[in-house]
Length: 247
Image (spheres, rainbow, N blue to C red):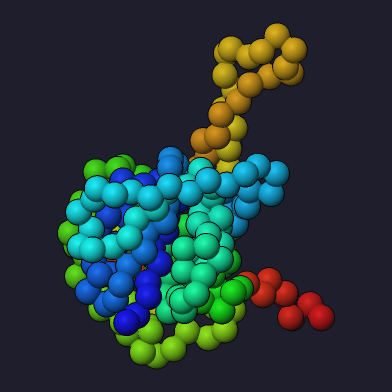
């Protein structure tokens, strides 16, 4: 029996993780472990200074999956799966998502969805992250659904290299194909918006917003280009951040 762990950063109960978990039950036994609430933007953060709790969800409709929630981060979910829930079993695959919002380009360094995948990869667990380019919780996922098992099965059969995982980003609407891509060079601008109200002892108050800027809009081999052309972008990423060209 293939043991599959499903995690996310949007929190338990969102449409993305429920669809992903249901689809993965076609490939093996699924264990879902998800944050109790949103953890977007947590990257690979861990709960280094606070206790981590684990709760079992008894009532759900996920085709025989085991479901747990935690107050921890997506990275904590991976550690709990490996060292507590499935301590005496092999984890054959970790899938993360489906994230409500793109994790292409520079977003990958902030992403809790991909943070979980990188932690899994570091521990030798094959991992795939899924995202769709829309932040709305009610985004239409039916165009993506047929690809979930097909692509996952293909990547497993091909073999996922050590310390490597896959960042898969889907466009909204009909998907016209798939493309191997690299991470687009881009950045966020105008990221902080001032609030009128602030604590009396604070220098100011802001909330995060921002505008994504594509630094190479003419490149045709990037994840951003693929999504802009209604293609599923499949990008291999690695835990090794060394820039070997500078050595």
